[in-house]
Length: 251
Ligand SMILES: Nc1nc2c(c(=O)[nH]1)N[C@H]1C(S)=C(S)[C@@H](COP(=O)(O)O)O[C@H]1N2
Ligand SMILES: [Mo]
Image 1: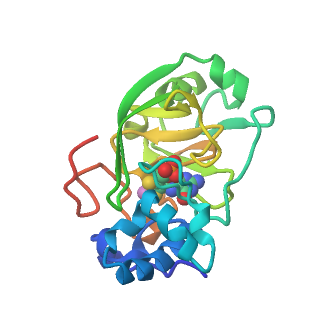
Image 2: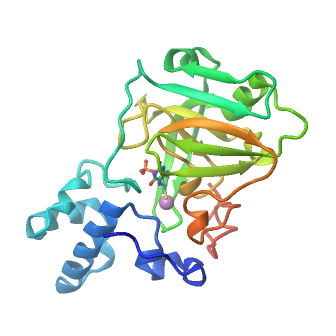
């Protein structure tokens, strides 16, 4: 089952329209099942919390609810593919290409040898859940861009995931902010596979869909293009509290 194409008008109110939410296909299948179970127990909202998933899993005839991790009730893990792609630290590479003077092709060790930046900030998904005070460690996106040497004609970034599906974009001005991190640690340990390890983006001031997981390449280009969810109705400029018709507190 594929996620139905969301109606951009409804995407302005994502929490009211399940098919337009950026849940992964599997999560969506699980939530669709749990949603109907939730009605039976009279608590539809609780279907998105993992504590509830834990309690309901044994009633889920599809078994899909079991695939939502049960050990952390704060995060919802998303993927748009059939699973979580895997790349070892030894095989991982991050490419920075396009309109740059010195293209980069960094190993995981080379990325880790760059200056580390720590930041502790909230993570907010456009569907409403928020994880407060998350400690991240990584390399500032702007540090990598300065190392590569961005040409004057460069206006935006096109980011790709090694899941083979997910893409994102940032304007150059956004990318150069001091709260855009190419992250390799989350909550004191190396990024897990489900959270997008070895390396993902953490776009702190923006809704979670900008924080592309399993990051494999950053192409510097002359104009911004829509990423995966933007092609499906979400705003390209995804400022928390100032986009997608939402009024959340800034992160
Ligand atoms: N490759 C990839 N990156 C992704 C997504 C995804 O499905 N695939 N989902 C996005 C969305 S909508 C959110 S809210 C966050 C969720 O991060 P988490 O799965 O670590 O909780 O990842 C973002 N990055
Ligand atoms: Mo999200």
